[in-house]
Length: 363
Ligand SMILES: C[S@@+](CC[C@H](N)C(=O)[O-])C[C@H]1O[C@@H](n2cnc3c(N)ncnc32)[C@H](O)[C@@H]1O
Ligand code: SF4
Ligand code: SF4
Image (tube, rainbow, N blue to C red):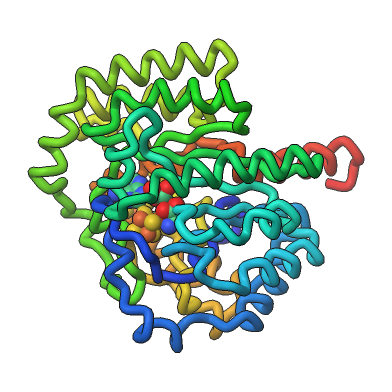
């Protein structure tokens, strides 16, 4: 199998599990900073990872800083500079709670694309409750508008995007959020289906899920049911808006899959194959590598090269396990097969590189 294996195209650096929020959808914030900080990869160790990936994947590939809250690591800018010096492109996600002093620095940095999480626009309380911190809406909104203002005044190129989870309390916010994006000339918005909060765990707690026998928690199933009818109407409207030119990054395939999901979540298990085994390569704060974030690590980047890990027996075993997986996180943006998000152009870059090589007769 490994002989025909393509290289991964969705590279994630989860540089820390630490987080200052208390989101109701996520449990990463339960990570105890003093326990994990000594175990996190150092700046030099992350640089070594970048050098290793550059040697294996060539230049021009993308990766995304995520976490936890990636901006809690002050070396994020140094790592982004180093990536740039190697010809690697960088995106990042953020909750935007502690970046107010960093706006200029972010715009001037090599980070090409920043995804700011925002779950509401007309009703700040919905966002604040989802994030477990009062004032988080105000900070996220300020970040989006100020970063755009600074970027435009400097003629900068930073892509500023919104990332929104869809859940029962905010389903009416989806369309106003798209209108906000268009009105304010924000680069785009990406919707994310609500997933089991246990999937969003600190990696230090991760024991791996029983993916073949997973059953969706009753409360989560009830949440989906309560929003299903309206959610399908909203997603239909999002499809129309995307056709009309609004900058919604989800592919049409993913939006259609969301409708199938809301109609009956179980249908998605038959309809969508999870392809993370041949696309994803996620490195956690401690150097452990996962192809699927709900399965056990397939190696550690301090012990082996990325290429060795990608081709090892544990990775092969993980790819086998994806075939019998009964989890729904295949719908998430980082996992969805047809989802060529604008903020991570690695797949497109590779396609163009391949096409170029063919046209130039080098391959
Ligand atoms: C885990 S966070 C890491 C980056 C950063 N801390 C943030 O919140 O933007 C990445 C994304 O996952 C989303 N997320 C959190 N819990 C989720 C859940 N249960 N289902 C789907 N997406 C979720 C967040 O809103 C965020 O956009
Ligand atoms: S979703 Fe992001 S901001 Fe919220 S607790 Fe998880 S890591 Fe922190
Ligand atoms: S659906 Fe995909 S990402 Fe989610 S647990 Fe299964 S194999 Fe992993």
